Length: 558
Image (cartoon, rainbow, N blue to C red):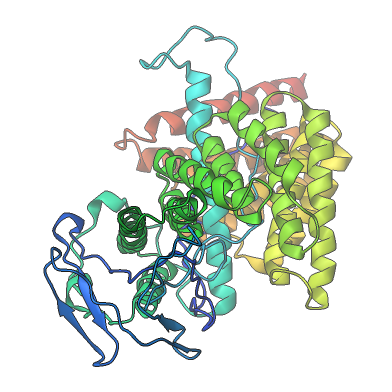
């Protein structure tokens, strides 16, 4: 049927990521309300306090009921970024005089980068394989009260987000050349095993260094796509900061100097919002979209209280909340969130522009799903214009990403534009868009990549509709060659492409070539007759090819 698309296994999903996530030496946040922070044990309930003795450079376990000793002397060391303070003296003159810290925590870095997380602008969603709405089964439910069409859309939305994220991670890894680009998509986090490394590494006596250590370790796991240990690591970062900040809030209360501003400083500390955001990113990469949504919403709430709803951090959490909603198939809610992002997001830096282009494309996908093709087309064109401008900037080294990454974004958006042209029966416009997408993909990916195969399939079909069967056959045969090389000649995807080739030959009245293609489909069907997963699909393909062949041949003879 017109506009149909097909799923091909191949590249684009088993991916890994880029380079070391090095902390900057001056990236330490010291709020006015810190006392000596205590890094927690893995088991938070049984964690013991650690007293830091800077003079002896050692750490001693002490009972939590004993009072904490504060050094009498004060000094600030620029190299270590740690603070020692004089013994605090609360005065009647100022209610804001607070206990100073002899150790500062490192500010938690959000992983909205390609080195270990997800780069802004990189989740460019596609509408190529969006399932059709089944108008014949409006009341048919899948057992959960959701009709089949809605259920199919929810499943497709999750796969769409997953494919977009991992495609860019794989490409970035290949560009950086630091990790294998052929790693499989990681399995479920629930299958994780205990990590002995977490127990055996001794704690530094400096809390700032310990905070950096936790973040660096978690980022390294994520960079290697070890999602289970990355999740453990980022959860430990959050727990460590949460315990320290909560302890300080209680301490302020005991000393009688807990002003509302000081309490807010700790309760909604930026590091808590960043840590929750990072946990959400790991869940998102693991396709745990409900968990990701929960963390992004919590991160958004904390960031709004301290940083404000116009801050880049709040907007980043908001954007990822929209992506998680989209992945869950909750399109109206996702659109409302995306529109809030577009209303708040600036357009000043390349990163700002990349994020806006990403969100515009996502909104276009939702508009297309709602049947608003013309509105969606204009939205896609806005996203395309921004990315094309970023590509030109990248040639001069002033963009936020490698030109190859921007070319991939452009290809995805062009595919979306081509799909709308195909649906509108504007086949010349569709062919132009698909050709532009394929040109970019051909330079960046292997032809057997599922991302490329989907474009080739659409381009071939568009040429059939244009009446250019010669180009259609060339594209289908190129697809078949790539599929056989990767999947073997008897795979269902090869049979599907052979069926399409036979139909084009029939349209050309080249019945001998059509017959050869049909025979190959039947051969593949015989090889898979004992495979219940695909035997039905093979039968449908062979019947369709045979019926078309017989019908056209009869018409030709008459």
